[in-house]
Every structure is written in structure tokens, then in C-alpha cells.
Amino acid sequence: MSTTPVRVRFAPSPTGPLHMGGVRTALYNYLFAKKHNGTFLIRIEDTDQTRFVPGAQEYIMDALAWCGIMPTEGPGLGGDFGPYVQSARKEMYRPYAEQLVAEDKAYYAFDSAEDLDRMRDQAKNMGMPNWQYNSVTRGSMRNSLTLPQSEVEQLLAANEPYVIRMKMPRNQDVRFHDLIRGWVVVNTNNLDDKVLFKSDGMPTYHLANIVDDHTMAISHVIRGEEWLPSAPLHILLYQAFGWECPEFAHLPLLLRPDGNGKLSKRDGDRLGFPVFPTNWTTAEGELYSGYRENGYLPAAFINMLALLGWNPGTTQEIFTLEELVDAFSLERVSKAGAKFDPNKTKWFQQQYLRALTDEQIAQTLISQNNLNVDPSRLAIICGLMKERATFAQDILQEGAYLLAEPSTFDAETIRKKWKPETTAFMQEWKQILTDLADFSAASIESAFKAFLEAKQVGIGAVLLPYRLTLTGVGAGPGMFDVTAFLGKAEVIKRMDQGMNAIEQILNETSN
Ligand code: GLU
Image (cartoon, rainbow, N blue to C red; front, side):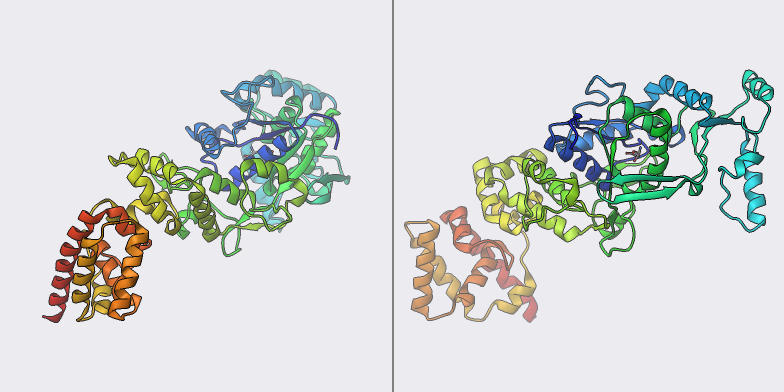
């Protein structure tokens, strides 16, 4: 690798919230920068004013902060290469476009929107549906290459609207090496004369992107595959300016879980998983749900995203951000689209939840839910429940009976599992518990085993009914732990109440 400092950028357009594919692009830029002791910056590409969405920039910054992959240069962050929002750099682009015109590498085009529509219609009528403004057609259009110079000067002086178009060279192979895709060759006959500078005084994405990547000293352009078709034009622009090209790496698409097509913003809520890092509400009030609000831990989200298109070459799946930085390389990013797997995403979330201490989970639950509970009691509940939970919130829902006595009982399981002799077993077991001096889980367990032994019954005949009596449901964490946690007084009280409730259910059934 060259010795120029690594500087990479994430360059979103503020046209809406950041799709998870965009977060992955930011993440790979972040990892690459950190790995090479470089700089990761963010640049807001808002040259298309018609697609500007208020709040989108703030959303993007907030989402990156939540993910823990903040750039070190960008709007509001400072840096020596600002401003980092293209509309604030507006004045600097025109001279570059004019320079290309002066050097005969670009030209003024005065064609009106109607002129262009007419050309397209004519071409369509002649069986050519994809008319382009290019090296062939430019000769019959109204531009500074076809009009006499005096007329061009007149039009400019009269403030006639114009755009500046790239004068695409004819029949030239543009070759460049993509760090993920290898050599890419495109013939310029397949490229049109893209607009570089618009009649509203703003550069297009292409010009602004090149000028900024150059003036911000970007060493590597790491971006989505959808920009690969634009890369030859970008290479030609670097050459036209006589600037050194950055390295390019075009990342694979994120595909739907069934592998059919690109993961779109509508897929998520339709198929039951978030596509955005955090919630986004459109101006029309439509909500797109986010990973954050769905209870995902940012580290789980990031770990999952890192492996969507990159692999470490080992079987390791769980990575801290630091480990990702260490292991990451563009060489191990695949060319093929990466299928998003919502179940695997939940698996990552489970792993990260389990890795938290019981106290950490308890604190999160308390602050998220404004709970008024003893943190150390809640921590024990978290310890009992976390293996069965995907999200912290599941602990409160599925373990509600650990905080308060159950208000409902699973009638179906009761009808199936409660035998005529069960009530007598429960009464005896309750007596044993009442008499038990040491109410630790271990002591409860040995008392229970001795009881089974004495009665000569299997564990299933007593343990499930006991669980139903105490918790109302047929599954949950170890009953000896639950018993010890609730304490003797609560257990005895619940057994009485539970047996009454169960009796009622059984009576209702038999009536
Ligand atoms: N503004 C482009 C986007 O919205 C950035 C493309 C690039 O990284 O060059 O994705």
C-alpha cells in the first residue's frame, strides 16, 4: 500500500433516513480507516435540492452515533477540509466546470427540457428508446460545440439557462482496478455526456463528488455497487483535471432474505424486520421502524452488518468493534450480493444480550421503562431470564411473574397436565416447603428430590404442576431458582392462590 495517509469518506445524500446498506458502507469505511490509522469523515452530498429531506442529515449523524461509528471530520465535528456539506461549498465548483470547458473537455449546452423531450420522442418513434446526449448526438444539439462562438457568448451574456456537459471522448477504453472487483473496463462509446453543472448554479453529484474527494484528499472511495456504473466517468474526470485517482472499492448489494433482489426500504416492515438503524417518521407521518427502537443492541447490529458481505476467513462470528478493525480487509469483501438474514440478526442480538451482566441489563430496563424496582432483585430476574430472551424487554414480559404474582393461568396446559392426584401432591410439597429452614435453591432441590423419592413419582408429575401453580405458565427458568428468589412467604401465598385459580379452571372445564 502507498504511503499516502488513508482518508476515507461516507458521502450520504440527505434524501431520507439511512438504510442499513448505507450503515454498512459507513461501517466498512470506518473499519478501513481505523485499521490503517487513517481518517474517516462524513460529507453530506446535497447538490440535488429537489430531493432534500429535512431532518435527514440529523438522522444520519444520530444513527452513526448510536452505532458507535462516528466520523472524526464532518458537519458539526470540525476538520481541516470543510465545509463538509456540499451546498455550503457551492461557490467552489463552478470554476472547475469552467476550467473543463476552457480546455475543451466539457461544453455549454443550451437545450431546453422541451428540446430534450422532443429528441427522445423522435428517437423512440424511430425505434431507439434509449436516446442519450452523447458523442454522436451532441452534434445535432444546441451547445457550444455546434453554435458559433459569438452566439454562445451572446447566450451567456443574456443569462440564457445552460448546463455544462462532459465531452465524453469517443471510443476510448477506461480501465480501472477495483479493490473488490478487480479490473473493470468500459468503452466510452457506452457513456453519455453527463451533466456536470446544472442551470440552478449547482454542480451535479458527479462533479461535486470528484472535486470534493480530491480537495478532501480522499485516498480510497468505498461505496455501494450502485455507483460502479459512474466510476468510469469519475476516472475520466480525474484524468481531465490531471489529478491522481483514489483507489476504488464497490461494495456488494444487500439482498432480501429470499435472495430475490435488493433489500429495499419497504421490505423491512412488510417482512417483519427493521431496515433502518433507528425509527424514521416521514413528513406524511409514516413510520419506518429502527433497530434501536426494536430493542437491538448497537454492537449486535454492527456485528451482524460487518458480516454481510465480508468474512474473516475463519469461523469466528462474534466480534467487538476493535476485533473487527483488526480483522477487516477489503480483499475479504465479496463481489456477490449479501443475503440479509433476520433470524441470524436475532441470534446476534441474543449473544450480545447474554454477554451483558445481569446488573447492566437491569439498569437498562429500569431506565427504559421508568421502573420502580429494587435493582438488585431485577438483576437476579435478568440472570434467570436472559438465556430465554432475545431482547432485554422480553425479560419483563416473559418474566412478569417474577416481579408480581401471575394474573393469568395457562388453562390449556393445566387441563392437560393436572391429574386428579396432583392437588394432593401439591399440598404435601407446600408443607415441605413451609417446614424447610434453608430456603436456598440447592436445599429446595434436595428436598424436592427426597419428596419424589418418597412418593415414588417422576419429576414431570410434580414439577410442571408446581410451576403452573407459582407462575401461571408451563415454561420458564429453573424452578428451584425461582422458588428461592421468591422466598418462602411469597411461595406459600402463591401456592394457595394458584391452587385456587387452577381448581376454578378445572371446575369450569368439567361443568
Ligand atoms: N451521495 C452518494 C450517495 O448518496 C455517494 C456516492 C459515493 O460515495 O460516491 O450514496
